[in-house]
Image (spheres, helix red, strand yellow):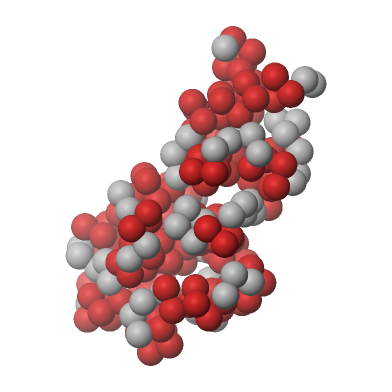
Length: 219
């Protein structure tokens, strides 16, 4: 496959799925301020449950609509309030457990990082393994959740660029774009790489690689 056709695939990916999950949630990550970072952390927790990405998205939007956009606001909500919101937004089987995890997450951000995840950034000091380990200290966030956070946050925490998780790279292989984040990053402007990685994940979730290839071939 020529480099030109691979570039067409990249452009088709961005046309079909080129929106980060933070963008879909209305999270202004570029600001690199405490509230957007906390909302991304909540989304990373929600996506760690064995439920669909759409359910995690719906629940995270509902948490934001409820006003729980900072650690202090989340911690001040009651368990019953969180259960009710989660139960009504795709988490009926995991509402009680997730409600407890959200409180623990908020408390950990407050107690360990003064309510500001930029302190976690400073503590990790650009070391992706350490960043992943610190993220996994939040109850309910495992490898998948940590990778989701790093995949999205690279937009404003540039030291983690280029970051691509296992799902994104598996999708990339299916499109014959390889399994190397560094090489993938060379195909787009640095500001578009988070969109590209998100697009790869969305293609994997939608299982529509053939459609992406069709769009690429028609361009």
